Image 1 (cartoon, rainbow, N blue to C red):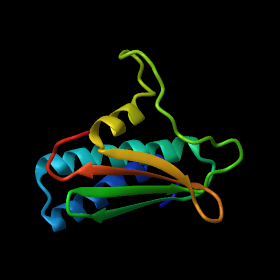
Image 2: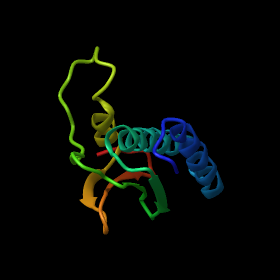
Image 3: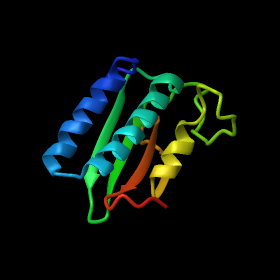
Length: 126
């Protein structure tokens, strides 16, 4: 999808449709949707590329999310920032960590990066 803000709600709509087709419970859907929105938004805001991708895979105990960006000059790996509860930005990766059993980042072949997260299917977070 284009690395633009309007792509974030479109990514969420597509994820919701896929999760519905898989028959996932509402709690899992809510958690996955939020994680996708946070990761996709970060890729759009902080990567200098033209495209952002999102892939979901269903596993026995979790849904794996992988958001891929094209990176770009000066783009750094995402990290959890400490901040106050009053700040409008900076809590996204904290939420990803709270809702995921595990998450991380790795370089993408040919440049860019993949940020991934595994959201438990039973609704229990790490």
